[in-house]
Structures are given as C-alpha cells and as structure tokens.
Length: 344
Image (cartoon, rainbow, N blue to C red; front, side):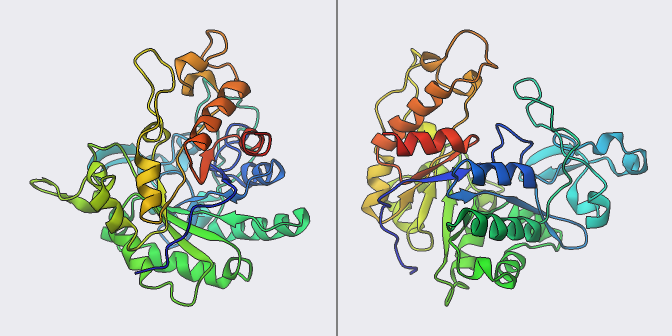
C-alpha cells in the first residue's frame, strides 16, 4: 500500500488547464498567467502524438480548441473513431507528428462565453515545455509550484500502442525540477493508477489522484460487454474509498458531489463524501470552479446573462466547499481561487 496523505492544512489552488478563464486552455500563456495569479499547481491534461510525444490537450480531438479545420493539408485526416465508448469525429493527435501539430494554433474552447482575443497566439505545448516553464516561473516567483498532469484516455492510447504511463514517468524524471517539486498524477481510470503506484518507489514527490465521474458512470477500464465492473458511485462508498486509498492519496470528484444544488438552484447540504474520504486518509480536491454565471448555481448568478463574469458568486461557491472540508480545488480562474482561500 502506498503511504496515505493526511488532509492538508491549507487548501491548494489548482489551475485547471491553466488560467483557462483568461487564456486559451493548455497553452504556455494560460499556465504563466495561472502562476502569476497565485496557483499552487498547474494542470496539463496529457495526450500523445503519432511519434510518441506527450502534449497538453484536454482530449486528442483537435477541432474544438485549434485551427486544424482551416489547414487544407490536413483535410484528409478527419475521421471518426470510438474513444471510451463514445463516437468522436474530427482530427486526432495520434494521427499527427509533433512537427505537424506545431503548425496549428490554439483557440478558445468556449467562444460564446469567453474572449477570443488570444486565439491564434499559441501553439500546442509539449509536457517538456510545460515543465521548463514551470521551473523558470517557479524560480522567478521564489516559490515551489506543483504539477498535476492528467493522463487522458489511457486505455484508448494503450490499444493504439501509445501507452503514456511510462512515458510520463520518464519525462518527469528527465527534468531536475520535477524530480523534487510536488507532482500529482491524475486519471479517471483505475488500472493505470495502480500500475503507476507500483513504480513510484524512490519518488516521494509524486502522488496519485483518482478522478471520479458521475456516480452512474464507470471508468473506461472497468467496462465489460455486460456492463460495468466498478462504477464511480461504488468507488464513493466506504468499501470503494478504502480500495482507492490502497493506491492513491487524493480523490478528485465533481464539485456537485461535495455540495449538490437544490431544486431551487441553491447550494444544498454537503454530502458525506469529504468526511468519508478523510476517514480512510484520502485528500479531496474537487473540480471545476468557473467564474461565469453559466457554470454557477442559479441562486448565485449576478444578473441574467450567462456570459457575465461573477467573481463573488464563484468565490462563494468555492468557500462553501472549503467549509465542507476540501483540501484543494480545480479552478479556471486561480486569481479568484487564491482570494477564496486567503481572504477567508
């Protein structure tokens, strides 16, 4: 069994895909902004190229967040495939070399809600580039800043012969900064975290975070023809949490599993999840707090426009979860997350 981490004294602010409320997600610009705004950790979601390079994208499909559709030279690579049981159509990182991906430019995922002023400014970043930025910005800021990468769709990439787990450990070990700075590796799957846990001897700076999805869903590596061997709902029960604590130190649930929203649109009574997780030694770091009305409980909205930036509402939502005992949280706006923690 891996060592169990106690609840943290000061909750950590995790920059979800960087300062993604302010810059296109998973870009060096978004990560630099997050660090300037006081994030304790930055989060690169990791996918992989055809030539085996780890890059920061929320998913391998490229059209939602890059200009790939405008590149005539790549038109023929548009295709359809099944990823984690869902049919997806578009362009995929596993069909491109790194050099080809570097010709693309990143754009805003939520153009109806967020500014597109930074579209076209940033290329896709590699994990190595993210770590190099983290090291230089940490030195500039005079403080240690952690890295919390998520391995995306691990079963999918493993079937393609592009398993990422050993590659992630190899790249973390290749940089002096990530040989000692705090690192937390995340996944929505179970088997790859268990695999990683068996390979972390002598690497005390690396911990593991088990992400949770909706209770009625199950991790992609727990799906069978007849159904689900293990659902996220089962993982949240006392026996499930004890099993998670055998290989991970942190639990990452959706924020609504910490505090649900009532039928009237207000934040309700906290669930038992934080208490039960702490009872088996797991920290709890929920996702994702976002500053626009659209993402907030209706009772916290400011005005009627879903696009309205609502710092007070976002801070109120975060603080309610802090009062429920969480040990950290993922936010698209680390500046607001920092205020929520520091100004209580």
